[in-house]
Structure formats: C-alpha cells, structure tokens
Image 1 (cartoon, one colour):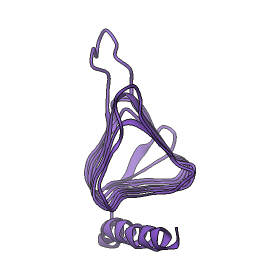
Image 2 (tube, one colour; image 1 turned 180 degrees about the vertical axis):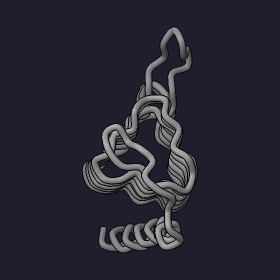
Image 3 (cartoon, helix red, strand yellow; image 1 turned 90 degrees about the vertical axis):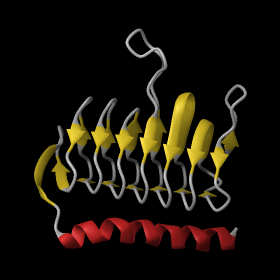
Length: 176
C-alpha cells in the first residue's frame, strides 16, 4: 500500500517493486530497482526515507525516521545507499547506510548510526545510537562490535545479493 502523509506522496522509480502487503508512507524516495517485500513498513512521516538503486528491503523490515527536536529542528532522515540488502524483520531507525551493505535478519540499527560502504551487520545484532561502522568489516552482537575484515568472497556477495533480489522482484512483478 502506498499512502501519502499530509500532502507528500512517495516518489518511486518506474521499475520499483512493492509487495501489496508492504506499506510505504509519505516522504519516501525509492530509486531504480528497489524492492520492498511482504509486510515491510517504510514510514516517512516526519522526515525523508531514501533507498538507493538495487536496494532490497525484505519481509517485515521497518524503516522509520526521527521527529524534529530541540537539538535537531529538522528531525533525522533515514538514508540507505545502493545495493543494500536489509534482511527479514530488521529495523533501521533514523540512520545512514552506505553502499553494498548487508543488514542481517532481525538486526536493529539505531538513531544517528553511520554505516560505511561494504559492511555486514550480523543477524540479530544491535547497533547502538551514534556509532560509526567502518567500511570493509563484519559487525556482530548486541551491542554490535567489529569482529574482522570482510573476505573478498563476502564483499562480492554484497552486490550479488542485490542483483539476485532485483531479478526475484522482476519475477514477482511478472506474476502480479
């Protein structure tokens, strides 16, 4: 379901695929090849959500932003880079995610977190507010901690996952 909030409608690239059970509300900008899977919720009601090219937001993902406050009069958006895979039931809240990132199933990324390019956040991890996750590493745990550098195979998998989900979304679109 695609809904406006006040006078703002989501802006979707022509080839985005959004499952009919997903909810996309307000100031949400989805680039080319983005896919939003069953029961995902993207709620851009008090700030913008932006997802870059070939990003996939899997089943049950929640993406939200932060309301204006004394320290942040404009609120805090949630910006997601290109070729990002956000696993089932993960939560992204008012954070910035770089390119070619994997957010594992059930992971939680909190306010003001910056995830640099080519990072894997393990399933179930919790990234505490304000943290910066360094490019090229695996982060695990609650709170999430840097464990080791990514292998070349893991780095390659980040783009492969994005391409796979684009193709799968095209198959779903053809079935609609």
